[in-house]
Length: 631
Image (tube, rainbow, N blue to C red; front, side):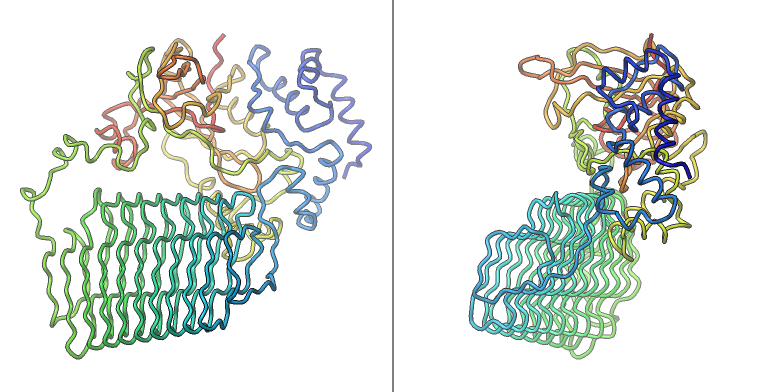
């Protein structure tokens, strides 16, 4: 192991041997010669042609560690002891790490009224055993950008005659790890209202364990759970279980969510004389994977209504396992298990199965081409089951003509045709802002000593303090899944965890004469823009590129892959009203889409299908594309 002093001598000798242009680069960047950033500048000069334009973007992603910190952390990484200084390491190296939280002992009686609680430190107990009071908790951990990990353990347990209101929990968080353990358990009388849980969260991992279980004569409602969330997982374990004469209403669960895996395990199970209504589950979702485990099972004399399940969703995989199984004297109604906007895989395994004593079972509409495996043989009424014909519904051609199948789930401007890249064109620009937490690359001397393999997940979890089944474990597993995926035909791919690794991969595909390009800023996002002057890279000829996309991981990680048969453009982006220049964009047009899925968002937005059209898109913030340099 080299000593810190030897390391300095090594860097000094290296620096003395570099050419004057490198020295000028370091001076221009006001960079100490011994930092990771200085090493990156020297590496660029060694690995690319002299005329290749240096990238301020890539240099900005270099590690902020100084030379002494780099040596120290590299030594700890080699000794497998980096986890002992993780908080300091994450802060110094500008990484994404969750804080280590221990349960709080904070308790508040039923007289407390909270408007805002935003410390994100595990709230243990609120209003337990309260008698005849009214609790109001308006906002908990809203805008949880800074502290995305949170647990609320107990709210209004064992209360009597209490009216509870919880307005908002963890709204607008980014990469959220949120748990709500119990709400209103074993309460008697009173009302409970939960208005909003984890709305508009990016990359959520949400767990709601118990809502109003074992209540007596209580009226409760849950207005919205994970509204408009993006790319993650969520679970709801129990709602209104073992209730007695309880009235339950769940208005919206996972509505308008994008690429969400959801598991709802029990609603109104073994309830007695209750009145349950579930208004909407997973409606207007994009690529959902929904599992609903049981609804009203084992109920006695209950009235259950399920209004809408997965209505107008796009692609995905849904399972509904059990509805009113083993119930007694129940009135059970399922209004709409809807036909989807685009094909979604469905399985409904049991409806009213093994019920007894004058059950009333009604199913108004169950979409066509579905798998409905078991339902009660007697006393069941289907108003509609797979009876729609082509003449009764719009054909796909009709939908396209009416515009219903265009841009329903795909943001306007996310994909466009090559003909749009002309000066004077007005077009919508999508939100190109990067929503992943900001991080930096690690120096190669550190990252090369860290495990990065699904076979070494235990060691990776130990370094980054990721407990079993945690959000951090899922983040690392998802990244590894993409990185270890077998390349597609004619694809060359690599995950790179240092700037030097990215340079190596790009030059291995394109040669030493390369340039890195990315869109200048996010200005123009979510508004109409005017295209100014346009330049085709390499004269607008068909070429190949290397595209690199961020992966969520503790340190900066990019998924890079070769992209053949493309044209790359740079374009001035102007304000559509004032015509002032506001941005300089980079767009890439894929000329061969034959291997793309028919349900790819580009075809939903533009129409057509694989191999029939070219598809263009902007390079979003913090993504990038490499091409052969334009001299």
